[in-house]
Every structure is written in structure tokens, then in C-alpha cells.
Amino acid sequence: MRHTAGIPEGLLGRTALHARYAEAVGDGMTALDGPEFVARLAALPLLTDLGTQWHCGLGFDLLGQIVESLTADTLGAFLARRLFAPLGMTDTRFGAPGPDADRFAVPSARDPLTGAPQQLPDLGHARFESGGAGLIGTGGDYLAFVRMLLAKGDSDGGRVLGTQDRRAHARRRAGTRRRHPAARTPRLAHRPRLRPRVGRPPRDGRRGTTPGSAGEVTWPGASGAFWWADPAEDLGMVFLTHAPSRLHLRHWQQIKSLVLQALR
Image (cartoon, rainbow, N blue to C red):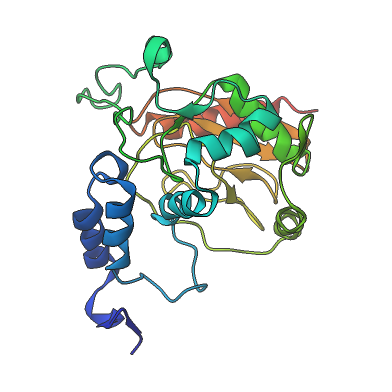
């Protein structure tokens, strides 16, 4: 029996372990500062052995703290210097402070599908800048990010992705298969994160296989941000809504089908 952090994996189970993570970190960056977040994560066992499975969890949140410790800078400042400025993403940052607060889109007061009240999490008072959530931006900025991916990491402001990143991207396009990520608690949609989609299109859990090309990269956001970069078709698409209910899954399927049907 495999042991992780001194606890036999067989005694935990995925559901119980997920509950332990939720109890330990709660609302993450809104409830804890960076050191508190890292300390609580360090005390928890891993779901699987390192390198055996890709799981959508809190690894990117932790990665942001690692970047800050290595650069002696805030994550937002590091991203602005190394990513946003070269790509011309002038409206992308953490939070919506000052005069820009009224530019932040809000969802309908009620879920159009169920009628239940709905709202997005307020990350404007986050206590640390997370590598996994919290960036806001515009459709134009997001499209600049997608164009960079289609250009294999290059942009007008210089190369953004390193050689190894570009080679990994090429291997995924060749058909290397990886596990699809498990669900995680929704936070904020407008964040540039990647999921390699390889070999065959993913399933959304309800309506079967969605159309697309092997090697496509995408990460539909929990509150309605939807984008993809399809190198095979030289196609980039960004579609932003604030629909935190399951309505955004319908948007995802319908918009993608319409776009792909329009290709000649």
C-alpha cells in the first residue's frame, strides 16, 4: 500500500481527501496570505504519487508563490514584465482597483436555467496574487495570448515561451495522451491557463464529444470565459460571458460548433 505524508492512500479516498483540502485552504487567496496558504498545503497528503497523474488542483496557486520567492517580486509584476508587456496585454492584471472597477462585467442576478441567485466570487480583496486564479482582462488581451500560442510562443514583443515549452507543445500535437483534469471548485474565469487536448476531443460530461482538432489548447473558465487555439486550423477564438451556471457549457458547445461549421 502506498503511503503519502505518512497516511496510507487506501484509507483516504478521493472524496475524503478533497474535503480535507477544502477545509484546510477554504477560500484560498481571499482567506489566507501566501505563507499561510503554503503552510496549510504542505501539511496535506498528495492525491497520487508525483508524476503519475495530471489533476486540476492548487498546484498553480502554489507555483505563483514559488515564482515570487525566486524573483523577489509580486506575481503580478513578474507576469506584467515577462508576459503581458511583450504581448501588449495592457488591461490584464490582478483585481479591478480604482477607476477600472466599473468596467468589470457582472452576471445576471439569477441563473437563467434554474432561477437561483448567482454571483461571481469577489477576488478584488485577495490577500495574495495566485498563479491559479484572479487575473482579469479584456477580450482583446485574451486574443493576444491566443495568438502567441498559435505562433508557438513568439510575439511582436519577442519570444514568450522557451524552447522546451514549444517542443512540449509540438509533442502534444503529435498525439501524446494525457488524463483530463478532474473538476475543481470554480473561481474566476478570466485567467490564461492551458489544458493540452490531444489524441481525441474531450467530453464535457453530458453531451458527448465536442468538435475540434488534435493538439488544440483550451481552458474554459468557470464563469463563462471560453477560448481555444487550434494550430491545425490556424484558428484562435475568444468568447467572454459572465455565466457562472451550467449555461456556460451550452455557450461553449454552441459557439464552437458555429465557428467550426463556418470554416471552408
